[in-house]
Length: 563
Ligand SMILES: Cc1ncc(COP(=O)(O)O)c(C=O)c1O
Image 1 (spheres, protein in one colour):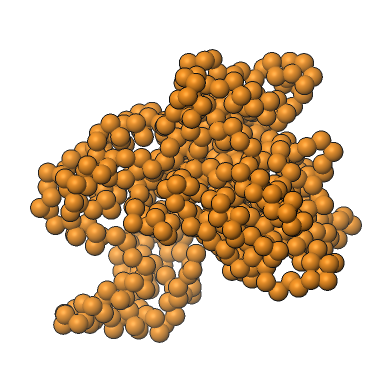
Image 2 (tube, helix red, strand yellow):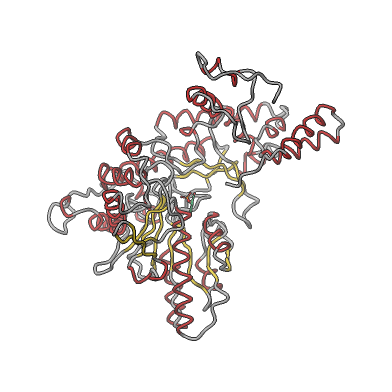
């Protein structure tokens, strides 16, 4: 580094700067002298061009497009810290309004005093929900003179890592129950019955499995816990992880397919959602709501006295961005119930189109079910009135009085006409398409790897992951597309034709060395170091030089992040 020219930072353009040719951009240690903002901006923007395009990242549930008004509001408030209640009272009011709207949307019962928090995402919210269940269980056990050393919590193997993290970080035994084809890759109520006991602090039920988009049978699980309580007197609560479904199920005609999942079930004590998923806000906001303040132990809530005011706080993080909360409120009042409904129905309609198109090729079978006729529909040949009534009544209690024609009426909430194609005609679930090679395709092309489809699509800029289903079912790999608001009909057509073209190319060119593509997968820096070690074994001098360079750099303090 010392031999490199020391250039001043009076450049004509960023590409005239010392970083353009002579000097590496500082990576692991802060430089002594700074550089012009224009240069750094241009260099970083160029480097970040190597990232995938958020719009084509079909792996993520997280919002990648927001309206200009919402984005402007976020940027106008980007300097506000959500922790500073007293300094930003208007923002705090907005946060409270969001909690209140969500409580109503999720069926809080009259007389209940719901309480909730904005969080950084569903992970923090799940941890807060789990911790409240653990503390309630401990308090009850202590009051009964019983031990509190072996708490356990129930979840399926399809649980997202946030749920497992809760168990590990908060020292609760995770009873992770196998999912199966029979249980539609969801928590199986029969297994819940077999695995609960007096030390069970609660059950995590997922509204919208990350793997396949299926809703877990919350009402059935609740019934199992009711029966258990009748027999033993032990009252086990449910926390619903509605990271994605909390902003999908309430708005769609399908709901969750008839059964209940929210505060209409007395056993559901708390629900979380990611505002940054189908809440349609950029990354950085989640929500948790307890149906009543009695379910949130008081000693978990900190009272902070700043500037003469009193703040109440139950969060894992203190400082966090406030703009997302404002954008959430913007969406709630700008879109309203009908706006969210339209968006979610569009997403589901596009997801059905993708599912049907994939199956029509004969190359693929869907593991997700949202394109299959709802059981009631296939039996009766029509959308059941029961489902429609349930959705209309949920909608009525969620929206404000001003929007209803008459007090308590549902006159402005439209219900689908018989024969109209809405989500009510199909199995309920998230707008997620999980698919795999069909059995016939596998028989004909046994040597083709599904992962290659994902890698070849990546070359066309689509990001569609290929991964194994949860343990027990992990012999099955799925490709998964999350259909978000900005997956337009045209983009979808393009995606379908790209999937078909790539698959046909694979079928024709099965002599191509696909391992080259596989090797192109990105590795973490520490994995790259291992690969270089392999190179050294092969005796390549250049590789050795690289390793020496790398080792030197390690010694100079290049450290890993875990994120
Ligand atoms: C079911 C489920 N729970 C929890 C999470 C974690 O959510 P977040 O990314 O908002 O922390 C996810 C994320 O995909 C999820 O799908």
